[in-house]
Image 1 (cartoon, rainbow, N blue to C red):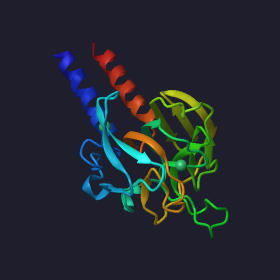
Image 2: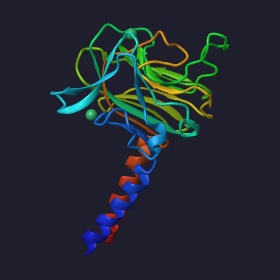
Image 3: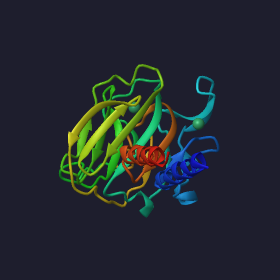
Length: 236
Ligand SMILES: [Ca+2]
Ligand SMILES: [Ca+2]
């Protein structure tokens, strides 16, 4: 009975955490969204973007050719995430990208914006061969990682803003972190995977899978599960 109570508590806390997963693209059925944002956030494959089977992952993944490929996930108020955000995805480089090629971006500032990213919102991108993020409106606003993620292997990439710091993780290991604060900017630009509506010359060359966007910082989810574990112990 006690174990059953504990299981219910953990499941309930898990449900609270997962309810904040707004968007999830596994690419098992096109670019449909399996997050709480529903079909309004379904993506469309544009240019040369295709879904391919990746034997290494035993999963369908998004393949981007670096020329004109991206997924358009549209502009929807569900994307207006301002206080806390976690973005994660799996990535394998298959070509020679560089600069600021975007994994996922809700705009990145237009050519007329001063500074150039001042009307952006949130984005996760390359910085050369490293992971990078931009959060327009926060006191920090950007962060570049240190690990080479363009080595042709699959990597799990995560960006977290929890309201007090911005963090980058590569394969679950902290890659960069800085203090921050404030609200993330809101704009009218669509979310694109693999390119950036405001900079449509930047394209990722590679494979992408399991793109997730949530409005809670990932560590909070872990804290909730940790709390579940504590409650579990107390009831024993
Ligand atoms: Ca997949
Ligand atoms: Ca490129």
